Amino acid sequence: MDSEELKEIMELLEQQGWKPLLCDTPVPFYNNPVKCGQPADIGDVDGEIRMMPKEFLAMQPEFVVTVQGDSMTGAGIIEGDAVKVVTNQQVHDGDIVLVMIDGDFTLKTYCEDEDGDPWLVPQNEAYDAFPLKEQQNVWVLGVAKEVIKRAPRISYRSCMKQIGEAKAKLKESLEISPLQVSRAIREIAQLIEIARQWYAVYRVLADLNVVPEDDFDGFIEMVTDEVPHHKALPTRAEMQRMAVQSFAKPVALWRAGNAPVQGKRYNDYLKIAQQMMSLLGV
Image 1 (cartoon, rainbow, N blue to C red):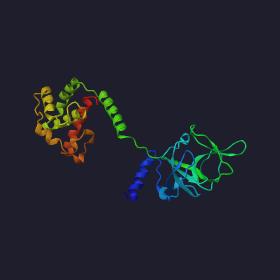
Image 2: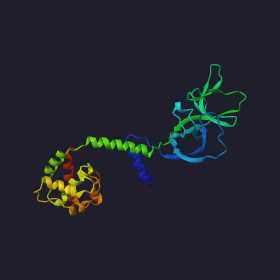
Image 3: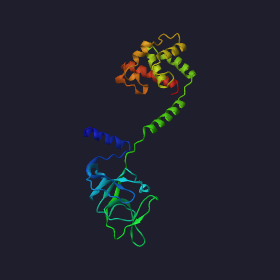
């Protein structure tokens, strides 16, 4: 993708109400998970540099850490999220801070009690708040300013279940009676001038599961029963001849530049297909 293509995509997203940001600024990113639970050692591992939008970044030094655990779920921070931490910040009650305690790291909410004593407060009732004691070696490394959500991935089984339910509802809503099909075939026959044009009618019925895919013989029998004296009844050879390129796909996927007929003839097939759908109430 070149810069012009990227610019075009950004503009299209903006036109549709999105607010795209270009990742164009390097930021240190530490893969060591920072626990949202009891303080834990972050380890002695180097970070990597990742690109982020400059709009996300402040003037102060900053870095990004990955979250592990569930003690901050009440603040919308879950395991796998990345948190941008800005250093050299004054800490206020209610700020989410990254703190090092005796060499261990934790992400918690900072708050001072009525006596002015500092506490770290989790955002999950399963965990208790705990005070920062004078005898501890405490270093508030920075304040959390942004949470970068991990892109969710849904299981294939879950997707297929929803697709199956949607298909069942669609089939129910598009239930077409034999009487409707009979009437539609008799009506559409008036537009058919040559045998192969019946393919457009077949394709619509196949799309709607009225006839099985590639059951040309069953379709020909259906047409012959309804309009036995039509001047151009379909044949298997003509049906197979047309079932190529985009015409082998549902009508919604037909493309003029990838069809077995072009120009006016393509438009004639499309008109027949659209008229057939209209007659069936689709």
